[in-house]
Amino acid sequence: MYGTIQRDMSKSRQKEEPKPPAGKQVPMKGMGADYRIKDDGTVVRMLYLKARVRKDGFKTVTLIDGEGGRHTYLLHMLVARTFLKQPPHTTRVRFKDGSKLNCAAANLEWV
Image (cartoon, rainbow, N blue to C red; front, side, top):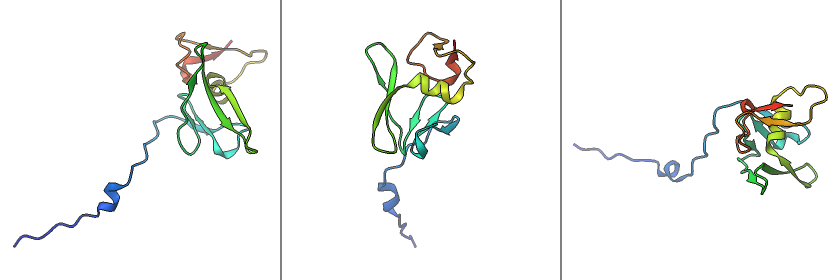
């Protein structure tokens, strides 16, 4: 009268990959296909990289180029170069809300 229910436990035991947050994601210039950057300041390399905060309060990420060399970049500069049109003769980026920790493209502007 009562049937048994069989479950495929293999799927429930597997770790689920975290879903990426919504937002625009594009390949990073000069870094090959391994890296992508999102407009909210997230850098992705097959997984999400965690930015580090320097003593001066700026976020940095260390990326590995195609030849295995490590390079550390200021996160707000990577986001600005990728998502904001750089006017001629500008080299600095300003945080609109004053927070060095908010590297979202919407919070940055070239000055």
